[in-house]
Length: 188
Image 1 (tube, helix red, strand yellow):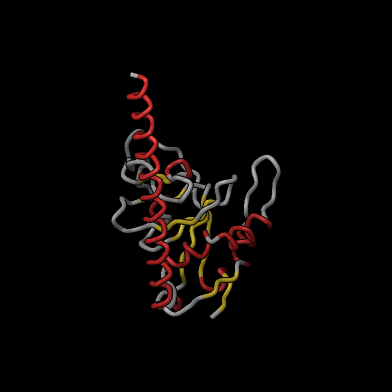
Image 2 (image 1 turned 90 degrees about the vertical axis):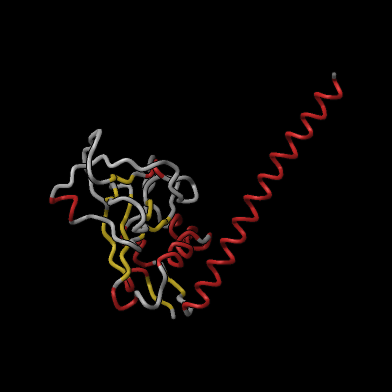
């Protein structure tokens, strides 16, 4: 099945809010994520839970898309994380009810982060100093939706590939340490 992102989801912008040193809700910003869209810090609630933030609370399976700047990525919100809202750096993508049984949020994140999707999105970006991807462009992204079994297989293959890359990187670091130690031992 082929659908546009606008056909299968609702897309809204994150909110602008002033943070506090303590609060009940986490205000997610692009700086909280690494280049792969993984949380890179411990989250500390830094927003008060007022009516404005309550209606924008992220739900399990909501997808965040960083639309501003050169680091455009998608990630999904899991209910194991503390209550949170997205900043204006993000679009919040919510899969419509009728499609929730047909597409996994993790698969949609994988698809948006795929190089071909990123090429399409970045090719439509606007601005010079700080480029951004508009909601209209995001809504136009065509999604190929395979069956759930295929989606799961794609995600498993991707996870295994990422694990392989990580292990290779760790091996390279250890190998470099070993070589440097051998050089130091040779000097002595």
